Image (cartoon, rainbow, N blue to C red):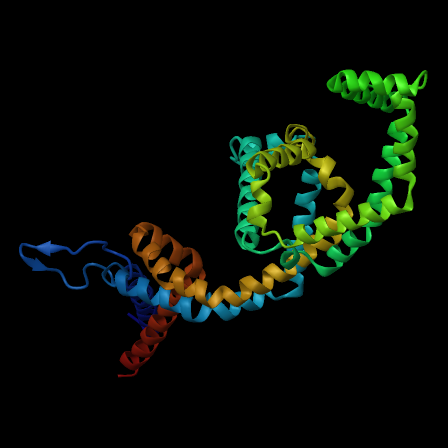
Length: 377
């Protein structure tokens, strides 16, 4: 065998040995998956490196992801990026537009969101809210006087209205006794009076002659009601009664009427005014469309800004609770070895091929050197 042939042969053998050795070494990273035995003797290098160290590999990957990749700082930085917030805002604005123009009723939307019997629950909540508010106010003011509990401006305003109330009462009294019904009432009262007095009443009627007693009394009643002295008297009476009322405690006031009945009527009035059945049957768009521009252009961007800041500030605590490293470790440990091998190969296939080729090149170079040494000797 001449020198050239020997060198070529040695290069080919060296390259083959180098490439095959590296290929086997790469293969032994994953294979075999399980330990192999000859009798009771376990073959060395079984199982492969990654199957043997899968638990440690999973822990290290989890630790790396938690400490260097998916860190609170990186997530917080992402949440605070203007571009990210702008993308979220645009997405929410697009999602909001169909909802703002939705034809479905409020009841249908709530049913879709798993809020069962929303109308009945809302009515019960309103009644309960009114009850609670009333009971709190009642318990707070029950042992206070009217004067202590009402604002001084209200009391002054009410007191200033007393002359107007007197004037109103007297005006209505004059109108009443000037009319037919008032005349009839005076006649009935005088007839009852005369009948009650018997003969004395008859004598009085004879003295009056053709003039009836009510014709004498009615002008005097109107004259009395029109008198300034009557107005002053009524003002004084109302003022005294008002002063007495101001010193009443609310528990005394409530004894004068059934507050439970008043409360029930108040609740019925509120519910009638709200008209919940009609509200729940109206389309969602009826309530939202008038505010569509404000919601999309102001509310959503503000909400994204504030929610983003709040979430970003809570990220360290959330990440600590999530234990990202443990999640990654568990996922890696649950991978099948075939799946894990495929992931590594997909990531580093080109590099592994280059390692195999490098082994071939080194083997070929070593074969060349050996061939030259043998030829020279």
